[in-house]
Amino acid sequence: MSGAASHPTLAVSGITVRFAGLTALDDVSFEVEPGTVHALIGPNGAGKSTMFNVLSGVYRPVAGSVSFGGVELVGLPPHAIAGLGVARTFQNIALFPAATVEENLMLGRHHLTRAGFIGAGLRLPFAIREDRRHRARVTEIAEFLGIGGLLQLPAGDLSYGDQKRVEMARALCVEPAILLLDEPVAGMDAAETGQVATAIRDIREGLGISILLVEHDMGLVMGIADRVTVLDFGRRIADGAPARVRSDPEVIRAYLGTGHNGAAAPAATPPSASSPPPVPSPADASPAWAWNENEEPPS
Ligand code: ADP
Ligand code: MG
Image (cartoon, rainbow, N blue to C red; front, top):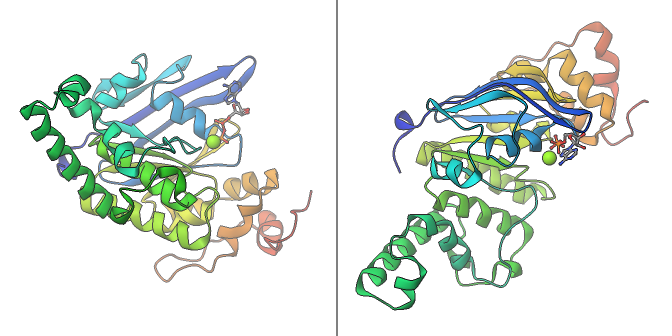
């Protein structure tokens, strides 16, 4: 895989999506710089998955543009967008459970094979050589994500956390320039979350691939994101460095307003040595900081 320098910027500009009277995204703009981890966060229903579906060509916005290295993605079908190096994972696991991990990962490379299934089925020498080369790359990517020992197991037999890592590996098998991850740690315990956080860091640092991470748990993204964009009811309410976004009164209000349980976590987390303590405005201080995250928020 090539270095970060060759990877393009993903520029999202003025994206608006409507579903029968509901504005799911309202004039949203942000830029994912090459080789960075960019988090798109917000409470449930904020429009994060909708943005994902726009970026990957599943939904067509009524307005706005998505430019990837100067190429307009709006209007392109999903396979064309994938072909430009934009790979995604889904919020719900989408693996073939009866197939082995290796077979699932090989599917990620299908578009890179020249022999195709017929050539491979006939065991033509060229196809055999090509197959061997792809299997070696699949093994390399699996080992990189710490799932090298699971390649011959049926994907459906793996733990939830391992399946999520297989999905990330499959997306990497496409050799993308940018990886879109939709809630990669949803439903995971602390140990599994830690493994995924490490994998995301390794992908950025080891492969130089940009990552757009959609997450509703602010706690996770604060540790690994270079930049954070916050959505609420389809609108962008904040965009910037994690420490600044975390202390933004409007962000705190958005998370509290939904009653989402992860909301108080970033506020309750002691600030790290590298970031200054967030300073809430007096009006927001009492609900944001006094609320125990294990309790229901005040209504
Ligand atoms: P998030 O991923 O941030 O939780 P979504 O992007 O899934 O939010 O949803 C944003 C809003 O758009 C929600 O109000 C949701 O109900 C609505 N929505 C999403 N997809 C559709 C759809 N296909 N049809 C109608 N409404 C939708
Ligand atoms: Mg979602």
